[in-house]
Length: 346
Image (cartoon, rainbow, N blue to C red; front, side):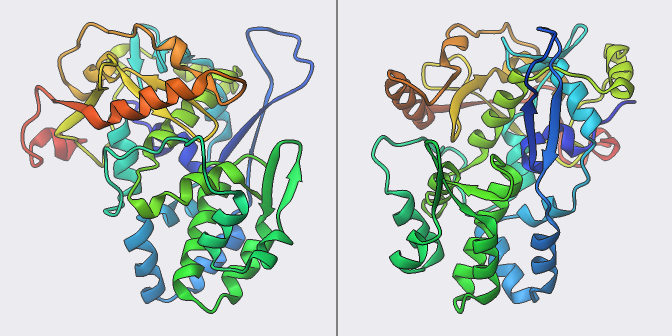
């Protein structure tokens, strides 16, 4: 049986930054470069902390530190990008449709502080980057202003500045907050290597209001995969020859009793990221959880895939954000208790 590791389920959680190369000669296959921030400095800091500081981190931010030890198969990511179905935000292997879901990402983060249905959405009027960094770091306006950089329309702060702050900050809680921000930017939402982006601080600044980052992580995964097509030869050979009976695509570490399948009047799950929006349709792939397959409803899904550029997207953001006030879940249909033989086998 082919049973993928969690890094197949949760790509964006592992700090993968995929860049399209310039001058590709093929419209169907794009040469991509898969790069990742060096996490050794973060890991070294974490290993030096005592149990009390680590527990303070876990209580506020969940299981993020395990991401620092994940080894990424870059060839597998290149191969998977080829099988992404951009129309339905899922993977299609022959006649089998598969997709990561909100519940899996939630289980990986395992943070009791966040509220499942309180999704992040980008507000029109938000505090400035300066104010957000002051709030997160607890540092003065002069300290923060001297370290903010700008390239084009993007503002950021170099990671080395935050590293120094983590090592020297007298306030343990702020030290933990800055460390968590570093993981969110360098691992979960990497953009410019070695830099902490303004968009990430907007989401991070809202975490203390119990907002869940999970939908944002999921949509940024989809948005990245929709943009690139290129296969690693070894994994392509395996994935191209998969048959339905060969596939066992279920996260072995969880069995959700209920699955979120729609929000508000949308027939699918809208997702708001930090750089753009999209959505996915869990009803398309309930079969992977041994549940009844439903007729897919994706009307309007394509028009709600957009980047935060130009005019006209704020109305859609409000619609998608408001829809999360009416989340709807369906109980999986052929599932027993958590101690069934099937669960033990998974």
